[in-house]
Image 1: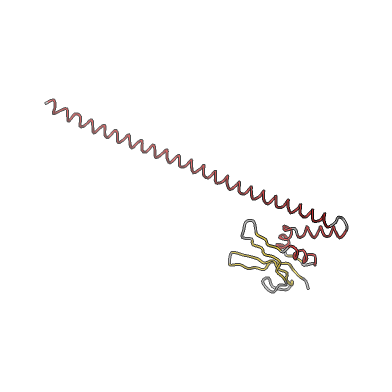
Image 2 (image 1 turned 120 degrees about the vertical axis):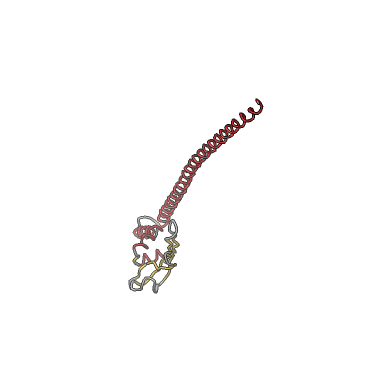
Length: 179
């Protein structure tokens, strides 16, 4: 029996959610499976993977063939690295403790890279927000400048109209006084 490690689709329309399962190669995608070893949610950023590492490693060592997507997931989670390191232990290249140290160092380096990526993304988002705020302030200053000019023009027109009205009333008041 040829076993495959594949994704089994779930979730609603336009919002896929997958289970990572061990299934017979002849079984349909969403059909019968032997064991569920994890979940994969591609809708989050970054994609969320919940994987039973020991069972995935067991099935990979037993010869289960993963699909392309599952192979990428297992590689990112370190299953293939651990398989490689266990092969080195079997050949006598190094002992189990050294293999575990190498795996832990790889995992820590990967976590550091993910944290740096998240920090860079947060910084980019913050910079974009600051740039947007600066543009908005510039637009608001231009609007405030136009409003101030308009108010000044209205005040000047009003003052001019009052001066003209005052000038028109002043000769009218002086004329009866002369008579």
